[in-house]
Length: 336
Image (spheres, rainbow, N blue to C red):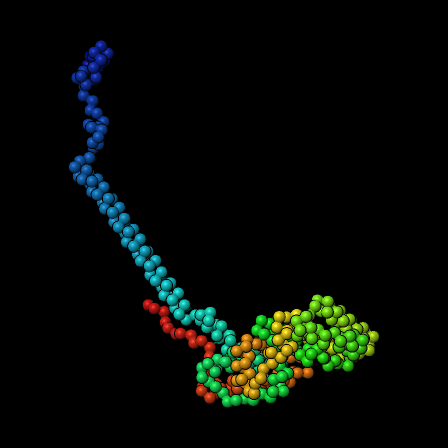
């Protein structure tokens, strides 16, 4: 045994050969490092199957993703279609701007005919609103019976052109004004001279800024005199308020003297000649005229004219069944 070991060592030392060449066999750990123990054809096929299965799963996942993407696209198209249908429904059932204006106009006419304010009547607002309504009734063939208006009432109505609402109303009688007692005095006497002169100058086409300045200077002095009388307790508060109303109307008439149509107003070119409501409405419409606010003391004429206008409109509507109606709203469901 000792001799065998020594021969082995000698051979390994002097020949450089592996121990296996010296008569002893030492098996390697693996016969082939690329094919470990237990590796055979079955395992190779199983690996190939796993690769194929993984590739199939990727393909299925891609196709499922494409299906989901297509479903999402279809949902977008469906939502877009429903949005369009909703938009068309709202557009079809939403009143247009013209329909809204018609509705507002009808509501205003109905209120003016049934529940007018006194200030709206004396300002001429109700008459100006009813004018186109009466003309519309005539256009649609709904003529009412002749509703008379006394010429004396018509003469008290202040008329102006369609360009504005200011009128020379208080100065129509050549500038002669009927003053309230609280305004009588030095300034009133000066204005009694200046106002007729200003009106004559307007009719003659010779109104000058100097004359208008004199009139306005006396007007301011008249206002200051009223304030001082109130401060000194020479007039009652109620009288002062009436004077203020009179003064404001007179001031508006004075300012209207400088309007381009002041000459026609003073000369009577705008004075209507009418025996009934239809004739008055036709005259005002054909000449493009409007009703200006009433002058103090003539409020009753505006009330008479308003009542006549309303009576004519109601009778004309009832005779043919014509009624101003709001624009109808179409009813239709959402398209499916």
